[in-house]
Image (cartoon, rainbow, N blue to C red):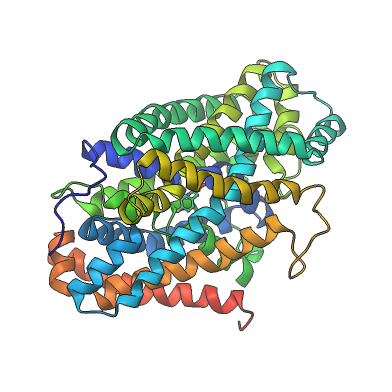
Length: 451
Ligand code: PFF
């Protein structure tokens, strides 16, 4: 018998859910990762492939994942147990929930370290301002990377902030935080785009880099990178949207809200690109600078421009906010499971999962300095965790979710939950049964080196 309500509480409105789920989707992936991978992959054509992946793979899987959450109304692990009982399916499907719980901890452990870099830059922006000299900026970044104390300190600050929001629970913690953070984020991005417009010719160079496609820049790897990023940026494949869906009251359209969320996520990524690339071109910087792009190059732009002190602060505050609303969704599946199965209070569950994640994160922070020579499979701890989660766990999770929603659950239950007009349902069905899992399968083949 399906639950009608989650024991953890519910979102107070459709808008609250949209804000929370958008908060989960919008994060470092949009503002830190999207610009640098777009820069590395030549711009416009990559953006088009990424957008196609969001539409054809991301949105159908997002609908599937939140639908499963709302039907099961528990943490992903227990939701899968309940749904499998209802569908008469093998109970071992709950491994999928477990993979999500583990992926959430692994991702948050390094996500928090990078969010820590952004927090450190807020501090640097406020108290030092940024130099206009590229070598000084690079030295500042290198100095941060070389300092275990600073990296661990900022990682700790970010984890404490995350867990103190999660502790308060769905209504007073998550919901209130995202209601404040998301609109602020949008406002800050619009201000930054407004500034980018004042860069004259560079603004048009930036726009043209982002939006005029040159398909000769695209190879198989770029397509697969774009596809993998669609998962990461929408926060799919590990139960984050599933657990948020489990707090969604009945009667709210899952398909419509998923479209809004994916739309908002995409707009933020594009706005970030529109804000960043004109600054990159105006200052003669390199679009393909890699993961250090925003930390090593944007401060030069902030150091050069009038009002750069303020814009620098705003930008990094924005990045920390965006990371925080994603971080709370990364840990929520774990916390919900501890509350359900171990009968912990939310506070105790948050502290325990926070400490576990923090501990792993310390090793990630150290992998940039004292542990930089410690390698497994030729990768540092940071590289390994990033590879394991983004390249393997999220795609495998997304593939299984598509298979589960498309092939394992009974059609009548899926129809009941989605409540879509027949033609739209059929379209979703084709996407979730064939297109999305087929495409993800190709990603996985690439990851294991068969393609
Ligand atoms: N979507 C987040 C970002 O773009 O930064 C990261 C993320 C959140 C990944 C939640 C996975 C997840 F379940």
